[in-house]
Amino acid sequence: MTDAPPVPEASAPSTTGPLSGVRVVEMGQLIAGPFCGQILGDMGAEVVKIEEPRHGDPLRQWGQSAADGDSLWWSVLARNKKSVALNLRSDDGQAIARRLIDEADILIENFRPGSLERWGLGYERLAETNPGLVLMRVSGFGQTGPYAERPGYGSIGEAMGGLRYVVGDPSTPPSRVGISIGDTLAAMFATIGGLSALHERSVSGRGQVVDASIYESVLGVMESLVPDWAVAGVQRERSGSILPKIAPSNVYPTRDGQWMIIAANQDTVFRRLCTAMGEPELADDERFATHLARGERQQMLDERIAEFSLSLEAQELEDTLTAHSVPIGKIFTPQDMLEDVQFRHRGSITTVDDSRHGRVRMQNAFPRLSRTDSAVRWSGPRLGEHTTRTLQELGYDDEVIRGWRQAGVVR
Image 1: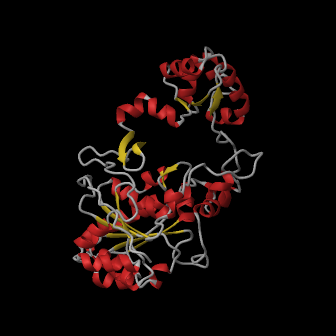
Image 2: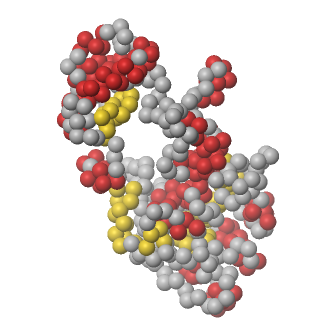
Image 3: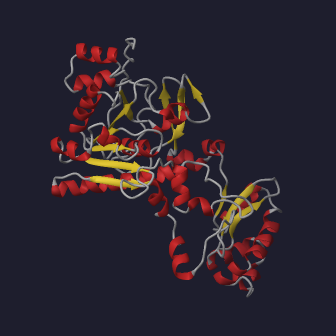
């Protein structure tokens, strides 16, 4: 392999946030593992992402828009991380990884179960030199069981966890949500587990393994889907834009061709909606006076509300219902988000300088903390942007690093 020139180093802004001082090594790729790293990085942890030296994380090429080889999705998911390009399939690469992990509080990985062990990086071996290490493992089906070694993407976990069956219109095949929700749910559950393990370590002094599966993470948010069936024999079905028996709560058309969500299923809120519609007597009509009654006549009620909503333009409808304290919301596009006063007031969208894309506007770090707030400090790094500096900090001299670069161990 030819000796690739080192990637110019970037100046990293100072670390802020409640996890300042926590060291994380991320060995995952694509979404489920890296989203854990994004959350921890947003909260101030130092996140060193290990990438394959030739092409890096495949997510660099994912998404609908890209420039200079890296997607805008990468700018978001890899933000607040340092990129170290390292060949984990080489002996030297594995040795370097162990040095990094020895100094880490958390290791994240979302490879197929068994991969770390094949590389000599199993938890038992890592814990010999770093007994306080918390290993966050994200996979399709978990680290145990008959499905453990199957390849498991987010879509499969969404299907197995029950989500895909209930998403969409009843007249169509099961739909996807529109984002990689299975992966991000698994990352959130893994992060909760990782932070819980860090807290427990402060008592015991010992780390442990966090085993987060995609299908169980999806299952964990599926409300009463299982007992509905197991106890009552009720199978939830696809219901489009409504929740069966919860009314009124739907999308309603306006005179100017927009769609607005109105949610007024509680008795008191429904009464306020009726007043806003100019039909206060409707709240006492026995067909709609109670939650159960409205649920039984959901379609009839929706049609009546749609007649009212169609008589007004979207802004008129929003102003009218807001004045009556009835929950109403526009279905936002990115353009709406960039222009909305609530988004602006809270800084929900932030602007980040990016060497490839210029000034990039993206979602901010959430949630917000009153004293040690989360933050987006920089966007997704270039491949190997922090390799040299990180290896120098581990004590390797420049000659050794150049040799590894020539051998393809690092980039």
